[in-house]
Image (cartoon, rainbow, N blue to C red):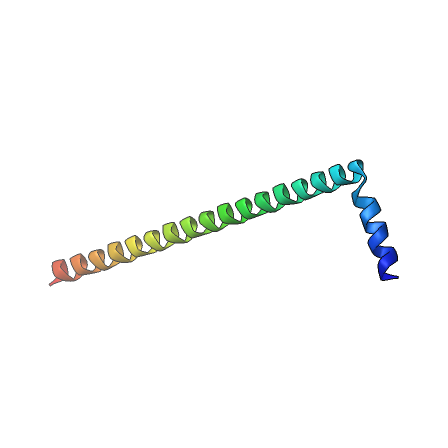
Length: 77
């Protein structure tokens, strides 16, 4: 059985159209994988940027609230 499979595989790989199909399929798979990786990286960068912006906004709001409270307390005294 093993020899038969080896002979079948050798005969298949000797056919040029099959080699072309295999090369095209591998190329398409590689392109799809690269595109998926690029999309994942872009999404990760966007998420990081959104998180940084939200943190900055929260920090600014907290600073403004603290400054306003200090001003109110100082002016009330």
